[in-house]
Length: 203
Image (cartoon, one colour):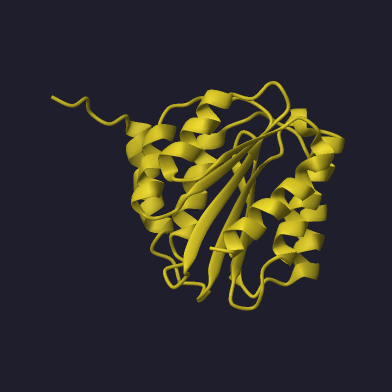
């Protein structure tokens, strides 16, 4: 017999269903959700470059596209709701207010991102880009990646530095249909994000 679901996993699954019943933002082309680590280890250049990368990513999208940004430490924080025709100036202002601090909890942030982008039902493609420089508990993550794959939502993972859980990030990407990238120099993050978005837009 299969093992019973963990109560916390059941709770998160229920929350995902509720978030996924929201209004379709109406993008008919592309929907992109960024999930960016803002834990204490990102302080300084890594955080500044991650913020620049998030801003650059938004400028790649147009009037028929949707963009959203969720940052996380020990809990997720929705900085830019998934919105059609992104206002690049407003996004830059919101991103500038993000500061590093706290722990690293990937699952809850990624779970919210999957649910939120699930609302973009009119989009031609829906993708998530996850950036982290640390490690996090793995409980529920494989199942979440499998769920994302079943919904046609690939997760592209970007691991920054030498303290990442590369095996987990590769698993998330491969299970969901995305790709994994490893970056050792934080100043390359804007370039890496721009290249990833360009490749998605060519699909």
